[in-house]
Length: 285
Image (tube, rainbow, N blue to C red; front, side, top):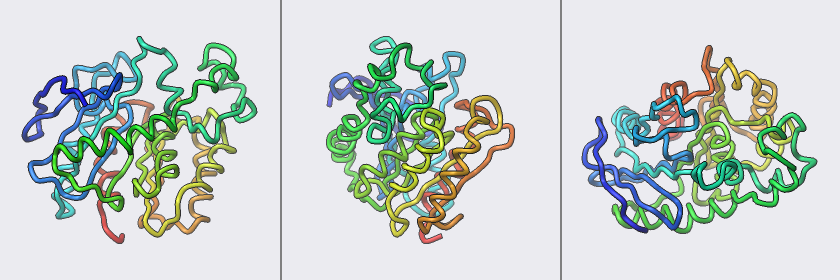
């Protein structure tokens, strides 16, 4: 881990720290005396540092994830979560790097898994694209290197019963995938606008069936009704049905939300972050 800089963010006590793990940039913030809750965020450049340009170069809004964490922690009578924001591969380094590392590798490793209408995203042969899928490698780095090293630095004792993975769009898929791949490391997936359209209903079924048991896990999923988010409706309903059939109970360890007039944007996701964190933090509800 190489230190890059420290900076302050309005609404957060202390500093946010920017570090690098090889070519991977990570921002993190922790309370002075960390508790048990820890949030790991995909698309980390959108979360805390407003100097970054996110998925949409015209949007400079951040998720204010740590600020929301502080407010929801106060509501639930717990210590605010440590927040670790993992950047995706820069577009300048690989225009398709983010897609490669957020695609659920085990379920999308063959061309037959991909919907034809999604091919345009990959600027070429889907067979060539899937050869470079790297979600499993990224998750190994997060669970074996990035999170343990940062947790040790800030004196955060890792607790798999209060460690969540959060993301949106492809990062939303990656969050669900991360929990089902590492169920003993994460207890919750907070997934905004999961991008089901790459694999459609079949992908939704496979991921929902593979999500770990409800005894100690939670899952939040949401989608808007405008633009790209409107295309998620049918597959999201499929995922919801399968999750419920697995024994997940609405409001207890499962939440699916339709955001009226919600768009595929950082602003929409940021507005709903507090509710998702509150759902995650509530014990036994």
